[in-house]
Image 1 (cartoon, one colour):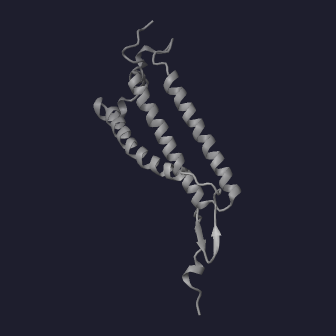
Image 2 (cartoon, rainbow, N blue to C red):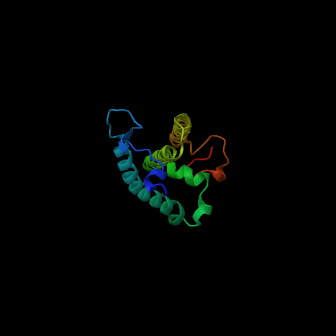
Image 3 (cartoon, rainbow, N blue to C red):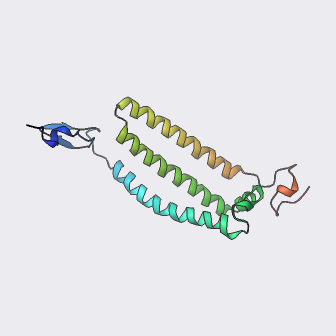
Length: 162
């Protein structure tokens, strides 16, 4: 006689799963709502990211003539001279990185079988994500659209020569 289907399927990693009298508990005994908030964040940030990305693409590719060929140092300098676009791009960077990091965290939880592997993959993920967020934030707020000694032909139109 063949083994019942239940016995052949491996038990998924669930917080409060009990199979055949054996309780499987992968997290601490205290209950928290982190996963619920992470799930909610993914849904809300996804909707906000749709708006941010499509406006970003519209402004960068369709407003100016020339499409992607019009994007150069002067274009970025002119855009980031306005604090509104700095905050817009910062919000886009932060939400995209946090959304992607949370998604990869879930994938690591689903596919990494060993606790130690899962731990080090998450450490690597969080460190690299923090580095990209920090570096991107520094670039956005320390960007100098009119650097001294630059070729005036490459600078934004609002930069004075001299």
